[in-house]
Length: 277
Image 1 (tube, one colour):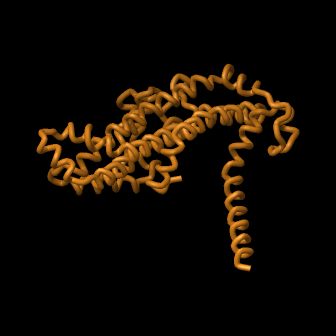
Image 2 (cartoon, rainbow, N blue to C red):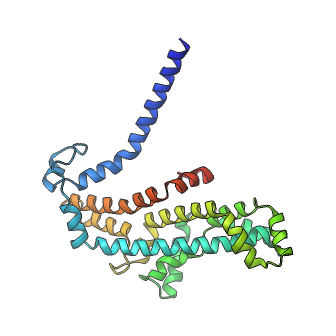
Image 3 (cartoon, rainbow, N blue to C red):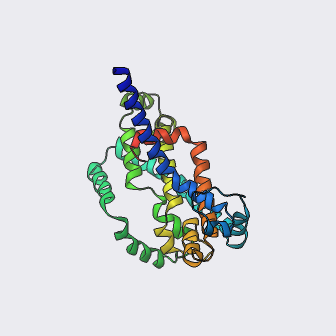
């Protein structure tokens, strides 16, 4: 009786987990399935009916005729540069706030951390005005600079990890003649690879999916990123060319799927470290 009850509980639990997983994955599968359908089939069949015959003509059209290749290249460039910048500057700021002694250090940290509570929408207009005064509207610099030098979340994440590293290691290195820069580069950073990888993955994904700031700061195809490109496609063609919009959305997903497959171990660890999903 006990074993039967256990089997029922496990079956129920697995059923709930399977339903949750299917619900999470279904939008992506439906997007890919719709992108592989012919235009006539897309409008005449239900969304969950498999594409038969499957066609890649939608991908070819959105790639060649609607500038999706340039949108992907712009997005990749911005995401890589922002990720590198945030990892470097967050590590530098976190080390200063975790290990170096100077007047007002804790007040500075908590004041900076408090900016996490400010909604992004509040800072968009002042930020745009600053970029306009600097002549950076519709430029890569305007896209990248606001987040290049780190975020409160990134600094907080790395600082908290630095504080867990024993002070004895740093003291021993100073006895051996190491200066602050050497300690940071040769001791702190190698011991912090997991948290830096976590920060890099979170930053890359957030930058790739960012829509609001690129929508405000760019106004031409010269700097347009993938999220703004898909939004423009949706606004212009969703009623007459839904297969093109779906193909564009599927193309935007592919790099993130590649990142997940390449860094799956780090992504799982980042979820465990930060609790983010």
